[in-house]
Image (cartoon, rainbow, N blue to C red; front, side, top):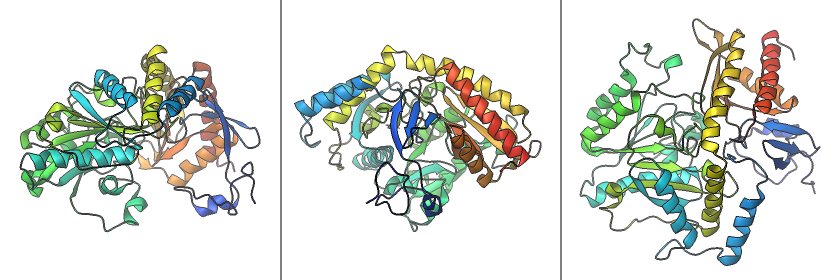
Amino acid sequence: MTSHKNLLNQSSHLILARTHRDRIKDGLTVIMKGEGVWVYDQDGKRYLDLEAGMTRPVHVGYGRKEIARAAHDQMIELCYFTPMEFANPPALRLAEILSEITPGKINRFFFVSSGSEAVESAIKLAKHYHFFRGDKKRYKVISRRGAYHGVTGGALNVLGTVLPMRQIMEPLAPGTVFVESPYCYRCPLHLDYPACDLACARDIERAIQFEDPEQISAFIGEPIQQGFGAYAPPKEYWKIVREICDRHGILLIIDEVICGFGRTGKWFGIDHFDIQPDLITMAKGISSGYVPLGAVGCTEKVIEPIEIFQHLHTYSNHPVACAVALKNIEIMKNENLIDRSRETGAYFLDRLKTLETHPIVGEVRGTGLWAGIDFTLDKKKKTPFPPQRVVRLTDRAKKKGLIIKTMGQALEFAPPLIIRKEEIDEAIRILDECITEEEKGIQ
């Protein structure tokens, strides 16, 4: 029997997500321990984690004993009770706390176990809203090419990127309408901002008219998109989208699964754009990855007509998960991690911009502690960089003790919000080495 301390290889009984079997042949790293912004593998090698657990949830860093104690104490008090017909104190308290920090009028909450489940629940809540108001024809959801909203049934329907994840599961249920994203670096409409007059946003109107406005339930989008590598839209974008949705009675779902809880230097990503969403989805930073937890929040307007929410997950409103989230948010407040994300993020972005002198670095961008480097073969033409070469950069970095990840032609960075300037300096040093080696073709 293979020891869990060995490299994970083909003899292991564990299935990994989105991991090609050719990479498993040679053995994959087993992460044994985490402290602060560092993780350690089976051989004791230390890595600076510039991705907060790769899928970006570990906002408060690794090894928080106070969070473990909160989970322990709640398990002893009440480990579980159904989300139907009954409530529990941690879920009630977490909903109250979230009503104080979420955008504007968002004040009702439903807790699930992941971001995908949160998106699924938001889509269902939007449909319930229209159904109970008598608009039973409204079933279509508008999403964007380049969007990532998860992989469960409804979430997969609105997935606009990572094509194999969609294509393998096709045919999917009908009802999704895709529009273009605001990716100004390589505009899908071949226009230039600001002369474009935000055509990507204004063209949503045409898609709605073609599909029939009376059939559209909701528009879903990330305030800042991961699909192109931490890409923030122009400041006018979300106001235009909000106006279009209002004109046609369409609910606006803002997906805060990545952006929420300080990642962008504010509590929520949409706080940068001064608009009111109808629903928001949350996960990742809500519990800093210490337990699985996601949530959907909505306004009173959305919940008011709904007589009964015909939806159920066994682990919804889970008392232990909610207790962990409460402690996590308490830490974020006590340590001023939202301000720290903004201030440290500005330093991080300045240091990343020093890498723009490299011929293959096309654009460096970031908001808070979420940043990206878009690579190119030609800076003037913005020729896309081969994805396999971006993957090679992550392999180089890992050998040097730095964990980073790819996003299309970009590298994306989302460290724990507790990262220090000296740790950022170390990361920049390694990145500079890796990019130099890639340019020289060093094997």
